[in-house]
Amino acid sequence: MERNACNEAKADYTALAEAINGGLDAGLTVSQIKEALSQLYAYTGFPRSLNALGTLQKVLEQRQSEGKAIEEGVEASPLPSHYNALAQGTEVQTKLSGQPFNYAFCPAEDYYLKAHLFGDIFARDNLTHADRELITVSALSGLENVMPQLQAHVRGALNMGVTEEQLRSIPVALKAAELQAEALRCEAAIAAAVEGKNDVACAQSPWPIGEPNTAYAQYFIGNSYLAVLDPATGLCNVSFEPGCRNNWHVHHGAVQMLICVSGRGWYQEWGKEAVPLVPGTVIAVPEGVKHWHGAAKDSWMQHLTYHADAQPGNTNEWLEPVSDEQYDTLK
Image (cartoon, rainbow, N blue to C red; front, top):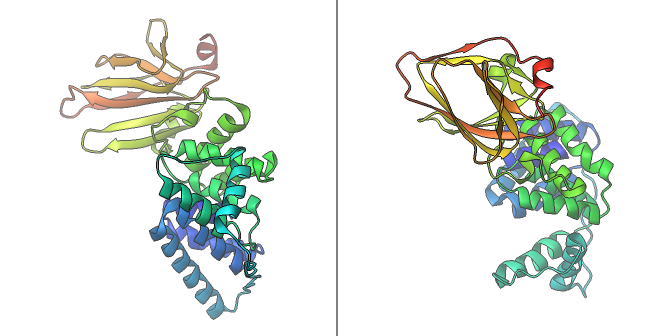
């Protein structure tokens, strides 16, 4: 179900179709998948939810034509005659949040959250409240710039009976589906919400993580992630996991600009002491100077980067790795 929810949020319907097929093969029912994709309109929007349900329809039609097994499952029970959406939703929201919540700034939104999302939707019993929070966490992991909501639902999942082991299984499942950046985002939210590790760069950073930096992986020790912010100027955000650093390298015909925006790391020029990178640090790497940069051993680090004074035909020259012996001396 984690892959279904995350791919719905990413609007990757090809991957979603594969995930739905895998889920049906593993024993998920049509009712469960349909309910999950329907619920997610409240978190990812009607277009994604409707397109995802359309993808489910196509998968079911194909499976029927191929004679593959389909288990319909049990539909939600009818609501009792005395059902009160606002009262039910307020109770569920309070349990999920751990305390009463009132969005006084926008009473209409407050009502929708209580009566419709946590009332009408959560009242449908073909998914448990714990299931619904696992689905929500998986989906929000697939979205950029919703870290406060992702952390809130990590805490909410625990309040609704999800175990820490179940929570930590979400990024494991996402990694297995090659959803690396999404798994990273989920791990950061869990670290912040459950462990109180707010120094995890990605847990509090508004900057996008991007995708695994596979094109340059051979020049890095550890994993890095690349988010292209402006293709026209080459402005990128690079995220380094703890201990990750790039090789010594030289920029010929351009000045590289580094702006640390999250976490802690290091920048070092050949023959000089390493310089700490913390949010707000700006480095103009001189043209032709051998250097490296990366995260601290115990912290993620994100920096923006672009080239200034770029000359026609400028190039990067990648050199030897920064050895563990060199790196481990940095404190």
